Amino acid sequence: MDYQAVIGLEVHAHLKTRTKAFCGCPTEFGAPANSQVCPVCLGFPGSLPVLNKAALDFAVKVALALNCTVQEFTKLDRKNYFYPDLPKNYQISQYDLPLSRNGFLDIFTGKTRKRIGITRVHLEEDAGKLIHQESVSLVDFNRSGIPLLEIVSEPDINSPQEAYAYLTALKSILEYLEVSDCDMEKGSLRCDANISVRKAGEKTLGTKAELKNMNSFKAVRDALDYEILRQSEEVASGNAVVQETRLWDAGKQKTLPMRAKEEAKDYRYFPEPDLPPFIIRAEAIEEVRKGIPEMPREKISRFMSDFGISEYDATILTSRKEDALFAEECIKEYPEKDKKTVTNWLIGPLLSEANNRNCALPGLRITAKRLLGLISLVERQEISGLSAKTVLTEMIDSGREAGEIIKEKGLSQVSDSASLESVADEVIRENVKSVADFKQGKESALMFLVGQAMKKSRGKANPKVIQEVLKRRLADA
Amino acid sequence: MPITKDTVEYVAHLARIDLQAKELEKLSRQLEEIVIFIDRFKELDLKGVSAASHILPIHNVLREDAPRPGLCAEKALQCAPQKEGNFFAVPKVIE
Image 1 (cartoon, rainbow over the protein chains, first blue to last red):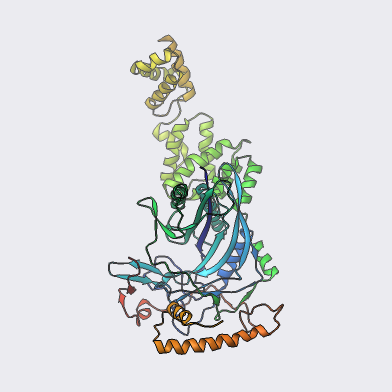
Image 2 (cartoon, each protein chain N blue to C red):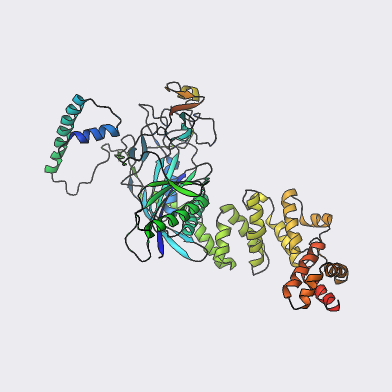
């Protein structure tokens, strides 16, 4: 029996404002505990909140970038509950008149494109941070009152891969807008998932579980994978799926029911009397719209039409804004009309160097000009592709030019067949079995011998030439 | 809508208020009176009148995103019933 997963994601993103949502306390990450607090964010009686203009502007920007309708009249509400990280015993949030609704986000999973509906984007405040110890829980209120955007998707997501693509696309948009750091490790981006399964073709939704405690996009994907399996097995064996909150345990790679006492939620929302409502006029919305830069989706389309690169490649190159800017410079400057070579360099060696060093492409401190210089050395067959990767790493490490490194390390490619003959002969002598295989018609044996010769020449041999030389010597041998 | 004792007990629990039997009695009665009073709105013709969230004619009260000095940790923790270092300490909330 085939099961279809129905997934909705709820993302919370910290807005990168200098101060908190309702008071002038700084929002810097990593400050000593309770050093960025005041009577407002500590919930002291008599203190009054005033909304941060930047938080509202950022929120409108995100709403527009996610194709939402910004409501002309919006207000903040109190969501009442008791928890030690919530000093006022209510969170200032939005209930029935959220800032915006009815948007969408287009995702690309490598094969297909899909439109995911956005139910709403609203503004709220974060709570403090709890550190649980042996006998007590410690509370740090530095995070209390940091502006948060809650972005709720429609249950339009049907696989963990789509969820991953949605989160990547959303993060990319927030980063392009420069409104959030989106750092899951620092908690500036968090994601909960609602998931249910149903038999393929069925219309009614199954009972859903709410998944929490996933601290990376990969964890979201893994948790959903696990949960689909678990729920499908429950349904297949005739058991009912229990509606509950489950926590992802990364160590055990499973979701487990949350053990905390689950009470019926009754938040008794009501309008926040301390904050008058907000009227956002069409002109103000247009003003914000003008300030929105080219979004990832538009960049992808432009890269495809201007440079003729595939949607898959364009999606990778535009995922981070800084990468996209560097990539565009390189691709534009690259003299050939077919951009495949330079694109492959960027997606392959460059991005892997950047990932190894935990930075974006510009962080490698290699200029577009120098990179293109290196590529052209390979194209002119002055160095082999293999050596070029060594040179690239060295260029990044030392900041020196390719030519200098090649000279110093003696990496110039040897294309002169006479000087490669001795290498070929040695390889033939040392690999009797492969030579025999080749003579019996096993083509792959030749590639093995080429590999051995490349190794012997420390990557300097021109692979095409050495292959020719090997073939010739093998015929003689 | 009659206000039963159960309702008042439930609301008291939500608000973490421990009510004595006599208080429960008294509050149930008072709450019922309030609700009956509010019910009188039903007598009015409110077609086309949207719910008011605020009664003052003010909107868009905003502040610039500029940091202002707050309290130092020592001051913030001054009235805390229990603390540990720079942290507020509370009874453990998870198992």
